Length: 216
Image (tube, rainbow, N blue to C red; front, side, top):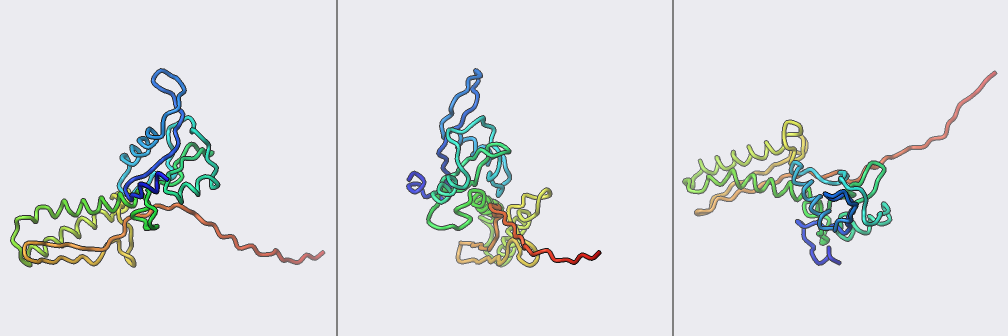
């Protein structure tokens, strides 16, 4: 109900507290907002576009143990981030937003939204010095060049680049940069592919019967 009321593509929701030791060495239950702050701090320490999905959290226990997928799937469908007790630690099951209107990745996945916002901010910042220039074809060409330079830098794979945009020669990370000038308004538009986190891994097994012969 809380996630439905928020229904925000830039707001995430957790619902469990966690156990840990305080400064005095007491084993205490911390409220869910502290878990939210922990996950938010985790995102702050990651490159734009990298997700907290499957990242481990430094906690000693959870307020309630969630069964995966019995408990986690309804939470994910309802727009809540589940944290699970796994064999390798306490991990974020999937870092999603409270957006329930559709399943668009740039709105559903927190990291994809961050990648989209970071791309938009980077392009706006590099185009800011276009304000005050003469509105002519030279300025239009310069704006296009600046935009392409930023998008190319955001597309460089790790570890040499941020890998905010994903693509290859067949499916480029960005394309269709269009610059237009109408009076005193310079407009830039383009298509890009922010990175989408891998949430599921499938394995296909083709089973065939054994056949052979034996002779004495």
